[in-house]
Amino acid sequence: MADKELDARGLNCPLPILRAKKALGELSSGQTLKIIATDPGSVKDFQAFAKQTGNTLMESGEGNGEFTFLLKKA
Amino acid sequence: MSNKRMALIASKGTLDWGYPPLILASTAAALDYEVQIFYTFYGLNLLRKDLNLKVSPLGNPGMPMKMPFGPDWFKGINWNIPNLIQAGIPGFESLATVLMKQTIRNKGVASIAELRSLCLEAEVKMIACQMTVDLFGMKTSDFIDGIDYAGAAAFLEFAGDSDICLFI
Image: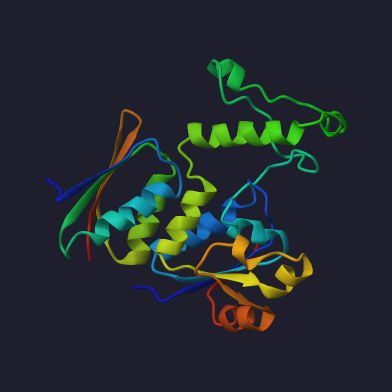
């Protein structure tokens, strides 16, 4: 169970990333954020986001036209 | 984590060209970049309090003309209207602007105003080209607060130490 959940469905680039950044700001180190998105570009974008910000992308899933990501705050 | 810097020059003031600098700047800020945007010539339109950006299909042959309403097959049609005809129809640019704004909303793409306020929230530094302001007799009261007015030397100081530098 994630500490926080972000519904980014229907949002397009770069909004899922920007909203995720904001949501992570409200968490403490080690806490997790689950993101649900519908933008297919978000798959690569969240990988790049994790790599560049040092937050860990723990899970990445896809199903029913939705993409889910689990980020752990650095 | 990263202490990277990105320097952008925003030189265009239409609805379509307003997106690249603001998308890149807001995203880079989310990735902890330090970001500066230097707005020059028509790019200054992006700093107006009253954002009244338009898009023109004229001289923009790559721009699709699609309808943002109706069934999918109808939305999928690319209306191939020759530039010469577009130029001759009064109000064509206003129509194209309305259609594009609707498409932007339909697709969950942020508005220019939204991206701009996200940039400001993320402390993206906005610099208006003082020379352009003087050249076109623009009023600083027309622009949003919290921006700086400077020239080429100020941009180059930041850009000289940047990791990414783009002219848009």
